Image 1 (tube, helix red, strand yellow):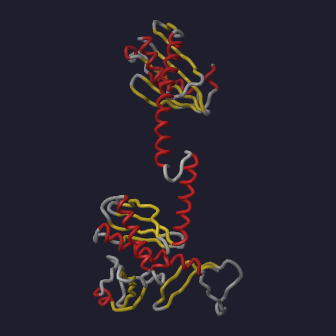
Image 2 (cartoon, one colour):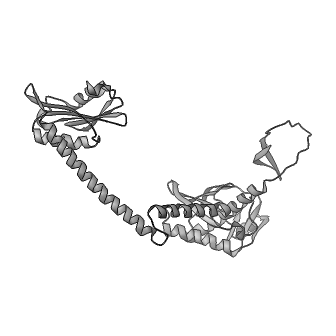
Image 3 (cartoon, one colour):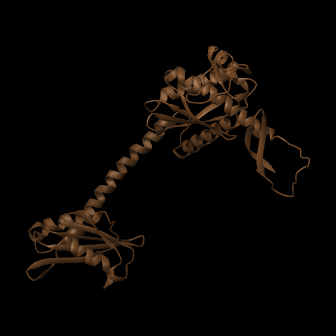
Length: 345
């Protein structure tokens, strides 16, 4: 049986859990065992939370107050009041200050005293929290003094290493920090180191020139993307030029309907604009299929919009292939469908 829940019964503590196997009845004797490895990880995370609270107050200001926290054997989460996102240099200063206290190996001491005496000692209490007449005061050397009834490390050096994983906002004026300690923090460093080595290998660099190598790859990528777009534009212009000759005259109006192969859906817009310029006055419907979807676009030159509604036109065609029309602008409509059978009809 595991016992994840603890409740206070006066001065006694009760544990609640679910029986995993066997039976249990009133009067049975049981042996209680603590998962020491798990408990130790919780102790480290809890003590680090207190160091984090004070570090935030020293770096950001005394307006910082705890608004919530989560401490388990994997990580710690701390919510606090602050009016803006923490700048990277501030976050680094907070992390450095906590690790400085870890290296100082300060003694972590607890003492039960009267609430008034605890306040006189300067112990921080949570705003709005109700306390008994006698409280437990947690002191970490000369760095932190707070009211706390939880389990803690014997000295701050037991924490080993403190590492912030993320900082975010949870509500107006409330920020959240998630962090790791001890072995979890070291594992995080190893993971980051492995990732940097992998990136360095991919760009044929090392830790000394990794930034320059990555920047060069990104610069080259932007150049290639620009060149590729130019080629696509040229392809679209060439396709448009060959298509314009296929337009047919129907009731005195030029009509061009065509299915295109190996043309990206987003290129259809450019091609419709080119064709409208070339034809002057026309109704145009283009289609292309890719990844199991049919992309359709209808273009109607402005002089014909009173006679032919592009939205109705593309809507009708889209229904034939099981899709819906999407408005792009007043005289041009675009739609997508999920099947292709009707395209060949």
